Length: 423
Image (tube, rainbow, N blue to C red; front, side, top):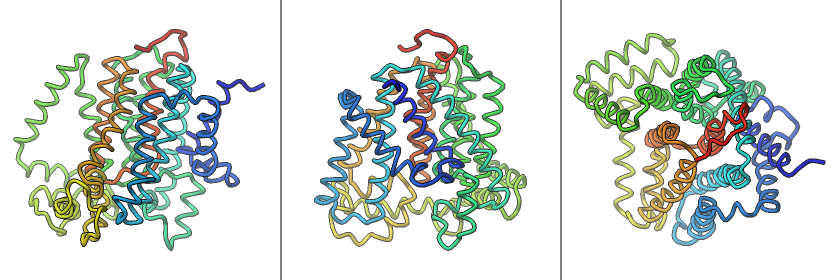
């Protein structure tokens, strides 16, 4: 007979498969590959029936309160003028959050750290498989992953290739970007893991190549910064911070023309018709002449901040969604900037509660780790924050990586050694 522990392990594996192993989840009979319509609701039902004590965990309580207030109450009262697009995005995000956070809370409450480690290890395997399929699919259609953000409207052949190959999309690109600090940690601080340093090195090289193939420039920038800063980190956290600050100061005093020349040179490694080639040259132009206008893609993106700020100033406390605003254009254009658009729509009060909710979850997860691993996990959080300044945070993949998969990787030594590494 299936034990309760094995039931939860199996369900959590299906949640991960439906989140990142797309070659399976998109190609089996509906709804058996569906996160949204099968595994997520089934997980929440089973957890509520058989492990209700997870709702005593502060991160879960704060998240549920956030959902009740922001979605069930405030969107129909204070924020009744919120656009349909924002309403859907916020509901989708909460759905992904509640599953990821209860999954994290289950493993924490049940103290099944070995099961968590197995989940983390197999998640890496699934990520590699999806990475391979992404490389294959984008070799056939280079802009396939980028186009996934638009839903392939009017592009049935592209949609079919995306589904059949299990190509990673927008959210997958963001998710693997968050892994680089942890992979580098496992190279620098060997902890008798079942995975060798060589494999982690190959993983970093391969996953960075996948990020390049996906052709979302914000992810490439974030991944590059995360890798450099993680490599600079040393055993003593204070020394790491001092070293990083010195590098930032040095980077600040280097002439802008140098960065423009580097970007232009880097663009030559890509096909002239690729998005990466265009973005690197576009960024070089913006660095040399940083005007906030749409003469460059980078300038146009940065120009969205003043547009959103204009809307924010009209109702800074309660948010633009609290009245019949005339700034729909600014909000639609600025929706790609996750943090600033949320601040503008919700106002200071709503946005601070959102940050408090996320901070409560991150604080709980950080309490699991030793100081060294916690430092590199913090770098993953910073990578997540950086992306939110350049793009919208979308999909469930990033939340699963931050809340479930990375903590699972922390417990990898338990697979080969029966000992506790919990603080």
